[in-house]
Length: 471
Length: 47
Image 1 (cartoon, rainbow over the protein chains, first blue to last red):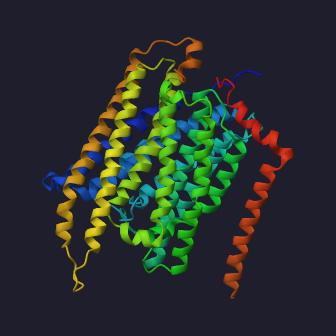
Image 2: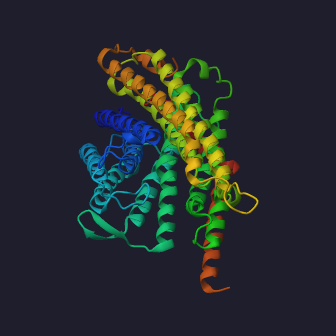
Image 3: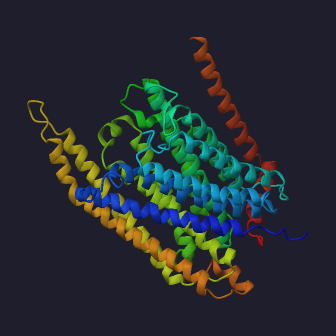
């Protein structure tokens, strides 16, 4: 059978742009972390915490996260289906529309236009752009899968399809709004219904944008990097379907102790705990795939990123269900514990898998050897240490904060004022900013290594290309 | 139990039945080779 001619240009472009937006996300994240400890750094009106924070989350999730998803999916789908992309023209349109959407999002957020819904701040015209963008992406991927030359569908394709369909449903339902002007709209839902729909969206966006795609990448890049197959394809299928069946019920665990009906909260809590099983199905599958290959953790920089990534996924999916239990939530919710949790997922799980994927792809799509493996290892340690300092300091801060908020005197009055609890946070916020700076340095090392790979990387021999991932 | 509750319960059991069928089909002995074959094709040269 003739080898198909795969489209790599579009993969290159998406890699480059996702890195640009990833750098913006981390840079803005570091700036807002310093604004927390030095409020004078606020530069009103555009560069205040209230406007930069959604820019940070949107650049991270939609610029870096989704940009990486586009790059990886467009690469992986062609290989797993053994057929070229259905429409390179549509993919090119998707690239430019992606950047136009992210720029429009950044500008409007800095100008203060927001729906005020966390993780869905974009106003209705940009919502429409997001929908057009996603539909063009979905058509291309689904059509490529339909005309595939490979009968068996590897597990990564299942996760990719779930992500494409899931994000579409979630975004459309939560976007329902009544426009009042060009940049102002009101949600189609009211009160607790609005909150319930929104957190159904927000938590399942984590599922469909920040869990299913990294799992698709993990299952693809792990065997490609180690040279051995995953432990069990059947286990991956069961973990996939149980994740799909369980995840969609869990959103209301963000609304424990609120006016949302009690049974919805209980349902969300129960399904959140049950979700440990499918999550750990993938984690265990990853670990067992390393049987007899653990020496590669020392020798292969790609495996370090992938295995630490899946480890953070495992930790994240234990901590998350724990937080969804009513009693624990009552203590920890609204404290700094929560951003510590979120950043273990984004900086640890999602980004480590994204870095691994990009390290795997860049030498292949540019036809160059990686400029420096030691720099890749340095990048690994910097982002790992930066993320751990970030998350651990906020977990400690969260417990301290919760303890102080709950402390009562004998007469029932609060022991501490809110301002006293804020002052206690400063050392931990400083540690968080320090961790963020280390992470940022790691990202700069990553970018330098990639730029040098493209500029000065040597042309690899076929044997080196094959061995590169295991070097 | 009102009609809404019965429908809700029905959907829940329906989803559970679908999931059980997927597990049965995936782990059925005669489907083992077919369901595991995809992981070996990952070792083929992509390019």
